[in-house]
Length: 292
Image (cartoon, rainbow, N blue to C red):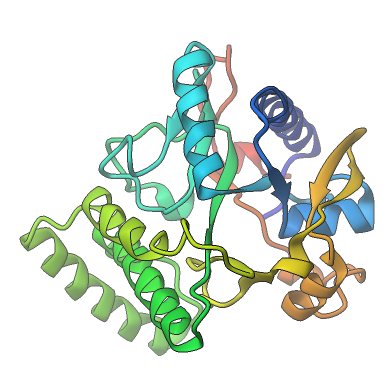
């Protein structure tokens, strides 16, 4: 979906203000962080946002990630809400959203999620140490991925699926049955998240040479060898300097191919909102209101 340009610009400006607070907190507390994914493509190709993009993705190792969340909760609670499955049992994702108070940002996929505040946010990912033994790493990855998908299914009976037509209908029959089972046995996203954290963080106190976020579509999509990630590399982004993996081009080529070429319009992705409200505004905008 395409935004009205003025609404997208206003949204991006607010996201940059959250990013500025995030960077300040990290600098003041010696937290190591970097950006990746679409934010990295934007930095290399546009020195800022991908023109249609509406979020910023940042990462920390889990110990720094946990410290960051605690600092935001204790020191910036008047401005932000830390939204994750530790804080809100119904939150269906394994990430944290640093969310602006008095705002609303609800994607279509999240429109039926109740019990947690969904607002304009900075998306924060935790990376964990990967088991040094390949067999153990594979087990760690798939078990983490499994619990992450159950978190989504425990909250969303009909999640987005990479199919259409009859395949999508059959997939949703399966997801609906899983949703019923999870609700019957009271497996909430928060409870599943606690199980996931025990699996994914088991090697975090051991020296390793690889780090990963295992909860993407492919659990091995966001896996970095030590030399791919460090030393972190500064790049310009919307007049700021952000840090990125050392071998950013290499990792992006593996994931996206020729990422420097603009994709066709039908393959341009964002988090286009089902409902949107800016801080200080009384009006809640629908998806139709925010489109071009």
